[in-house]
Amino acid sequence: MSDQVAVVTGAGSGVGRAVARELAAGGWRLVLAGRRPEPLEETAGLAGGEALAVPTDVTDPVAVEALFRAAVDRFGRVDLLFNNAGAFGPPTPVEDLGYEEWRAVVDLNLTGAFLCAQAAFRRMKEQRPQGGRIINNGSISAHVPRPQSIAYTASKHAVTGLTRSLGLDGRPYRIACGQIDIGNAATDMTAAMSAGVRQADGRIAPEPTMDVADVARTVRHMAELPLEANIPFTTVMATAMPYLGRG
Image (cartoon, rainbow, N blue to C red; front, side, top):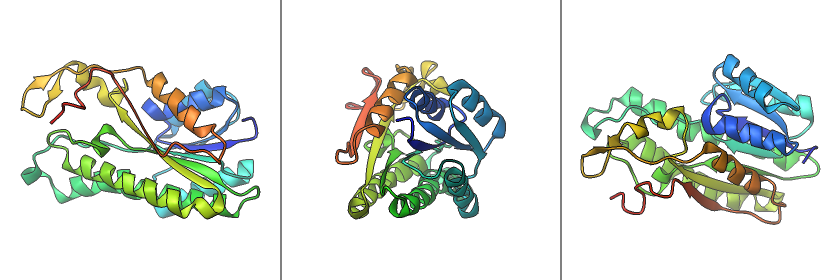
């Protein structure tokens, strides 16, 4: 994959950093996006190889356009977007969730994913050879909710619709789209799970986690399929986490 170019959002930590390092190990050239310059540069250093760090607010259309323009200016094309940037937001009862809190989660998880997908789609459609792949980071919450997570859950359900529409609309242009739904990967975002998180019955209980490297390897497998093949949806989760019995 030494001539392939991947844009990874939310690349400064967690799943994004792990995926960037895994892709770099496979020879991908990387464009790393995130809000904070220092963690992006750290990821670039850890990944090695050819990596361009572009501080980006994915909720800002102008910033997203600049990100993809920088990718093409540096590497000539975009073969993969890993649409990863997202946030859970504080657990909040429905009746207490403020409008700005709702908007912050939905704007990042859904609108940001759309803006990046749209910008990638445009490049993939116009470049030669034509085509590319978009992989959206969904969540177990794209299937079933956690308590007090209405904004996150709604946004991740909507990402599933985004994935399906992109997959359909991309067919004429060799643009494949898939989604990885992740459950309890061990990152800073899930650190509280070992201490205990709210369950469907109201209890606070610890939950098992899995190595984030297992997520990264799955994304790389999806990314390196030929464009004639696609994994539209896959779920990778800690084996013993409450998912099948979450409700």
